[in-house]
Image (cartoon, rainbow, N blue to C red):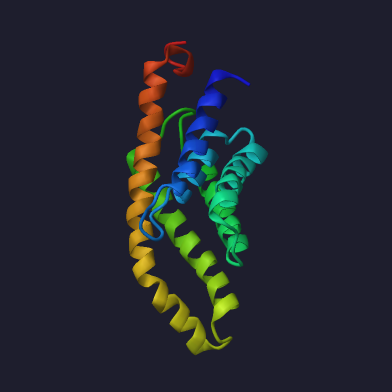
Length: 173
């Protein structure tokens, strides 16, 4: 395990464990974790997917598991794939790419997780489907805000860390 991978894993683990701190509903770093993992572990796709799922699992041991958890994990895995396709030059990307990835991750997570809510708790009809997604809109607004904030924070934090530790910066090392 090299210093770079250890620092990336630590950031993802801290993000997952931050879910244990009291927060507004859906104001979590889940999307940021998935994008970050996909972006930085693109050369090790199994680790890119497994790492945020394992970090979520560890946090969920303390928070609890719910029927919807399976859909949350599926959505997170799909967000990792978005992180895998964010263009980069090997180490960095543009703010616009991260912004687009964050918004795409928000939409994917909203669709998948709320489909789970629909299957678990709403009448299986068009009106039940519409009612489910309509009821989720206020949570989606919070999610988008959290996703943009945490994604920016996590990517920028790693840039600061990478530029502060010569062994992590490929331009210096």
